[in-house]
Length: 255
Image 1: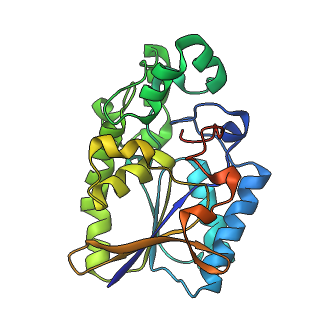
Image 2 (image 1 turned 120 degrees about the horizontal axis):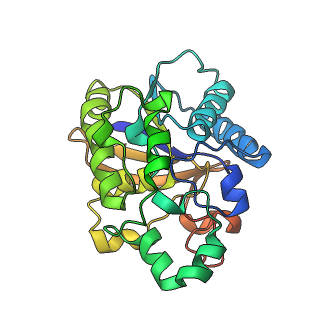
């Protein structure tokens, strides 16, 4: 039996402002810091420990992980970072106000961009793409791998490269792993683990900073999974309303 913990970063400034984030390197809000601290406290309270941590190269996921490990007195464990665990690239929507985008393009179109598996948002401009190419975070990434935009399936494809090359060997060595990443990256990995069809991923949502525990068998197939709260295992119905991403009034869904 193997244990894997997923954690979506705490609330970011763009989450608070209801903007599409994607690869924009936006930091946590004060609430985001507190959410990460609470996640670390919960994990420590219930006896979790980790041998290695994995995260993206975006500061909101990195900082969430740092805070969690600090709360757990685990700052010494190895941390591996990869662009392949970045949030889905939202193309030209990045930094844009979600309500304004809905008003401009219509709710149906925006929902297709946000929730469908294979629909890509409009591409970023060549100038913005060049800016990402010149970012030192991506200096070791092949130029052709830096996207102009991505669908969820695009995100899944590059996340699974990392899964197979880095996560699977760790799990096979019985290392205890935490992955601090983003809503769509985690959706992609969970879609793969739970063998969710493309049209089933629409209703899959990941709340900020609530540990999601996966129990895997020796073949790395899920035995079960659950969210972890202060009092232990919790069902999705127990997630606080402001983190309930099945609530259509909550606009901090993904991105």
